[in-house]
View 1 (tube, rainbow, N blue to C red):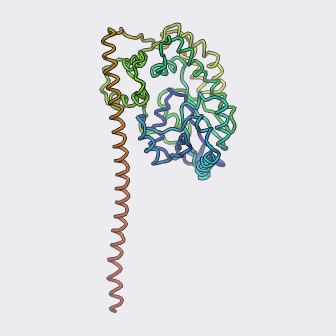
View 2 (tube, helix red, strand yellow):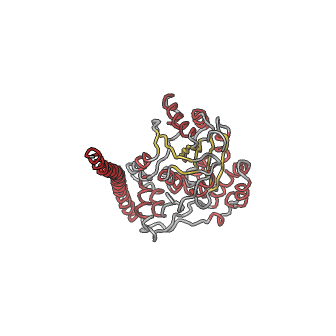
Length: 388
C-alpha cells in the first residue's frame, strides 16, 4: 500500500465474535501483512484514562479480567480525554504508522455508540481510518444477547425485545461510522465460521494456527439462572461467565448440560424480523458483492418462520423450592469460581514475568561467558607478546 497506512478500528458488533478476535489480537499483537494495508500490524489498547497498552503489556492488562484479553475503553471515556492525552495517543499511533505498521484498535460496543461520540472520536484520531464490523442475523443476535442479559427485571420477553431492537439496526449504526470524519472505508463482515481467520484474510495477515472460540455460549441452566433474576448484585456476570467457560465448558466438564434454548416465541421472532427488515435491506448497499450475495441468500435475515431459527423451547421448570436451593448453590459456586479464576490469573501473570526475568538472566549469563572466553584467549596472547 502506497503512503502511510491507516488505523484499523474493529467496532463490533457485540455478540459477533469480538471476544475471540480480541483474545487472538491480545496474545498475538504483532504480525506481518502482505502489503495491501501496510507491512505489519500491531494491536494497541487505549484504556479509560488514555493509557496506551502494547505488546507484552497487553498480557498484564488481560490478567486483570476473567475474559483474559485486552480491549480499548468505551467511547464515552475516550472522547472525554484531555487534549494532551489525545495528542500522546496520536503521537504513539503516528509513530507506528510512520514505520509502515497498521495500528488495530478494538471494542465491540463502539458500533452502538451515539453518533456524536463516534464523530468526535474519529475526528480526534486525525488519521485515515478503516472500520471493520461483524454482524449477524437479528434473531440469533438478540437471542445471544438475551442469554446474558440480567436486566429483564420482571419484563416480558416482548418488552425486552422492544428495548433492544434498536441495537440490531445494523445499517443505521454503520452509517454513523461511514459518515464520520477520517473514515475512508467500512468493511461489513458476516459472522460465519471463524472470525479470527476472516479478519486475518481481510487485512492480509497469516491465518491463526487454529480458530479461536472464546465466549461461545452458556448452558441452558446458566441462562435460566440469569433470566430468573437469581444473579446476586455482587456477582460480576461477565467475570462469572468467562470463569465458567474456562474451568467448566472448555475443560469438557459441562458436556452433559443442556444447550441454551431459544427463548423467543413465533410472535417475538416476527417482531424482531419486522422491526429490522428495512435496516437489513439498507445493509445490502453497504456490503461488498460477495457479502451481499451471502446475506441475501440467508433466510434468517428475512423470514419469521420459527423453524428457520431452530426454535428450542425451554424445558420443564422444576419445583420452586428446588429452584431456590439450586440457584443459591449455583450463585455460591460462581462466586468461588470467579475468586479462584482471579487467583489463577495472578499466578499466571507472576509466572510469565518470572520466565521473562529468567530469559533476561540467561542472555546476560551467555554474554558473560562469551566475554570470559574472549578474555582467556586475549591474556595468554598478550603475555606471549611481552615475553618475546
